[in-house]
Image 1 (tube, helix red, strand yellow):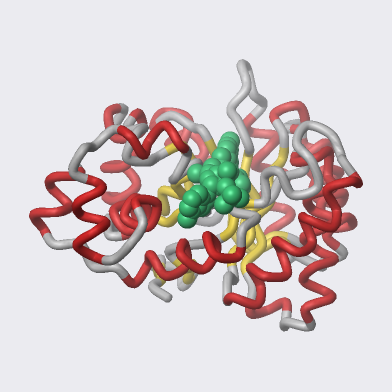
Image 2 (cartoon, protein in one colour):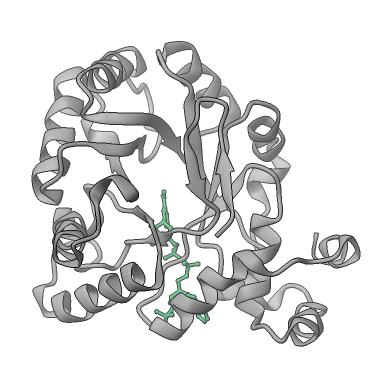
Length: 270
Ligand SMILES: NC(=O)c1ccc[n+]([C@@H]2O[C@H](COP(=O)([O-])OP(=O)(O)OC[C@H]3O[C@@H](n4cnc5c(N)ncnc54)[C@H](OP(=O)(O)O)[C@@H]3O)[C@@H](O)[C@H]2O)c1
């Protein structure tokens, strides 16, 4: 597995596992528990080590099931990276502390590796948010801080308030969605040693954009989804977190980090 290693020593696999739809979507759906736990179990067995969840995913049930699958796997917590996110409704000082405590309780873990602001909000009280974030890092409940869906300006404000380096901005990025290239975010992350965590990397819409995708996939004996992931992670400071409940797709996605695209192929896709 290839990694991105930041100057502060944080090492994150290029390909991790997204936990949206684990346990439900906008509310908990216990009828999905069997499917969700099986998906997490096979991801852990295949060797995924970075899991991305959020307090809002299935109203916290995604965190509960992620924690349960990790405990049941017997895998050492220290060998995994767990990312979770605080919702924009909880950005006040005490609300952040409470939200983090809730995420840790549901995961049944002592710390989060990476804690993100899930979405920016109008008039967000970022001074208060980061006072709480900085405290959580000092108390060793959180190891690293990041943001999600932030603009360059919002990211810069966050960097000024965060006592530790902002390690990531998690944004949509795929063959079919270049909005965070066009707005300067990718270049800013690459110049400032910040991970751009690409979400929705294989979402169906992106697969049809480039007619050359199929022939590049054939040339590598790979699927178009694997080429879409390989294209992302071959870019400096880009990591990604595809979600799949299908063990074959999970294995394909993990293996995509090992596909080397030529300069010409990168340009055709880019
Ligand atoms: N920060 C944010 O605001 C935000 C927003 C959206 C998502 N995210 C994070 O990003 C993660 C991934 O994004 P996403 O779930 O929206 O989209 P995605 O991972 O791009 O796409 C998931 C879909 O693609 C299919 N798929 C995955 N790998 C495949 C493969 N190799 N071949 C064929 N189909 C494949 C899956 O179906 P199968 O199950 O059948 O494989 C599933 O339907 C989420 O789980 C979440 O953790 C964050």
